View 1 (cartoon, rainbow, N blue to C red):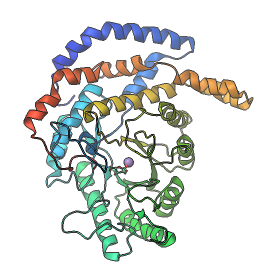
View 2: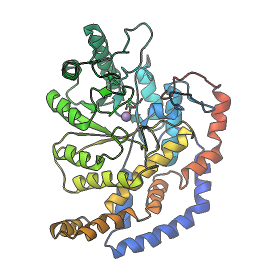
View 3: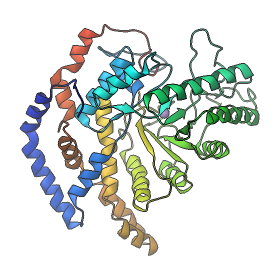
View 4: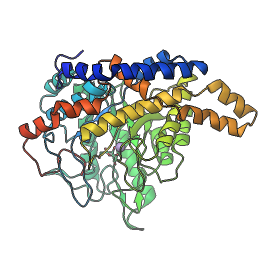
Length: 431
Ligand code: PSV
Ligand code: MN
């Protein structure tokens, strides 16, 4: 348990006690139904309780679009306040014990102090993220690219930043660097596809060489945006090639929002697992071009199918399978703390559903080409309401049965609105 908490633990207990009986009844009834399918609800609950997903520090600020940003009251103004907000998400939801920081947004002079603040809430640091998609004062511009820029000095600056991120990450106890670049073009003819990828590989080899032995580098691909004609690391194919060229410590990170609308993401996940190159995830959802909607808010079945691949890999002890799980969302119209609590629970729920798939039965139907029954095997798991399992896992771990309700009742946002004067700058979230 952590040393101190942002939300009064008595409030959590009082609120839980009001609905605990209902939860027990729902849990018992679900337990009976699962027993008929030879599934032990306690085993599933224990696995769900063990499942963790990292909070992105940038997610607790209000996001925006390229048209406007409408800041929430009480936004965190620096990484210490972001950690405070993340601790609320963890305290109430119990699914998010780690934080994924982004530099230079979260750069501090005293990483030990930051680690201490996080540890006081029982939090630690997951993969660190570099940022060469924005200019910083006094630097050469990334307008025409960063790690792939035509100018050697801009590439050197971008490489140096990534190496600095590794250093900052080491001080925070992190073990991985996630590299996403916005490099690409808006016009056919603007850039040579081959030369820009060559420059990327050359820059990344220098970053890779600076990785400590027990570190990994996660390469994140994205179809488009900010570049609208071509992007250098645009899909999992280029990502896989880059990770393979770099070496064993390089793996491919799948941000769910970074694919064309109809792409079969679960199949990409299966391929990356098969060839030991799955780094992990940035969970979010998307409908058209946004890559930052709340997890499971648009296509929860897809999220389930991704977890179906993960659980299949887990159950067959797939070699080298150890993905990092992170959320990556931008909250423009909701309270970020509520969205992140909710999204972490949604991700946990998808894991729970995937655990309910009868894998032996599925293999049998696949072998005998019983298409409908194979599909129904997945659907049966997907259509099971696992909310009592997720809520029970949360309650047993000391969290709130209904975390958003307790968050609202605690008046945390109102309190922070008083303590943190309104900001109009875009520093605390994704712009
Ligand atoms: C890019 O869209 C991305 O998904 C990358 O992970 C960035 O680091 C993050 O969003 C924050 O802007
Ligand atoms: Mn991402």
